[in-house]
Image (cartoon, rainbow, N blue to C red):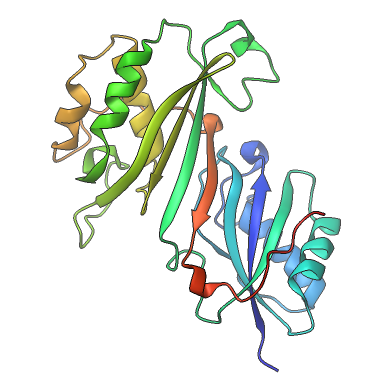
Length: 262
């Protein structure tokens, strides 16, 4: 029998991981998942990830693709993996997918969320693990203007890691939604795009916060979108405030109903 292709929807706390991608002698999300899969199936296999999150970045909707023996129903696989995975990784749902499904290349959109804490609880050890504490006064109107400026298709070369090789489409990404909303003790940035460059969301957030705290002029972000390099971009926001929230795929790739917690 041909193997099943399964999409896993993952939650993980990135604080104790050196990122998603397998690295020698480092604890990574992909490495932990592949070890768990090998233990269950008695065979080594690669786990594909939709996004290669960096060290410290979290997820509430990372997607991973695996191929397993036909006997493994998605719900049985989800339950079995959750029984042996460490406490900082959890599989929220599992879907049977078309054999041509690829977690990274089949994705049509990804959504990230960044948490900024500005209130008195920003210094709490229970808050600063998952949010960037900013002590300066933040102007909400300037955050909104920055979010509007990045909508649409742009070449985000200024917001990519320095030294990133040019791509065939010249670093172009299309941002479908971007916006800041108030939270109980700060602000939350939600952004959805067809793809993201390495560190792109963190560079955007770092620059937007510099504009909103008057460290940079209001028009700087628009000028950076036209810049050929990232020489003048603000430092990236810390990794620990960033969450990968959702990965979207064409409906035709789904072969069955999701298997998840009752």
